Length: 242
Image 1 (cartoon, rainbow, N blue to C red):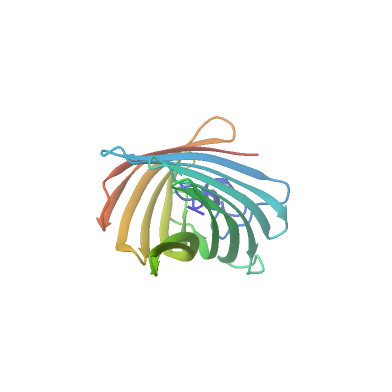
Image 2: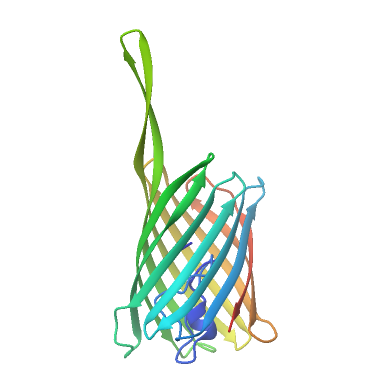
């Protein structure tokens, strides 16, 4: 679901500000009923590879949040997913725990394929260091449809069959956010990803977040590869809460 959902807790909530990550993800903190959040983010590396994401969430009811994610890459892959999130904790104590389920579609190589996702999220805020901060851990399993073509010779004729097979990606995002002052936040996120048909990857995303006038926020940072085939990338994002 993913400058996602990890800054919201520390930046916006009243009872300890919620959470967001690089594409603006809400983390385990639910959106208050009737409140909305919209984010637009982008990443680009020196090879020209880019990612653009739109993220929105709406507080449906107490401890329940609805969301929408749309993303596009420079290789022409576009995804759209709607998701539902529910808190598993009672809202008491420092720890927050939520799960989320999402369904959508991915457009790849001219084909429209199904997409689904399940996530489990934990987080907590802390104080005593400057203006406080937060910790989050988000585990996600994403399953996308993938077309496999098989050619079979039947007598003098060669027949081509197309099968829809699952493409499974597992992700774990670990985030630490600290607020040096009421207007600034420093966010470090370790992104781990594993998929069946490619190497394991690990990236560290570090950014600074500044509270602009009104409900707007601005994030600027860098994503550094630690393992796997990727290049350092710059990222920028902005979002509104109302």
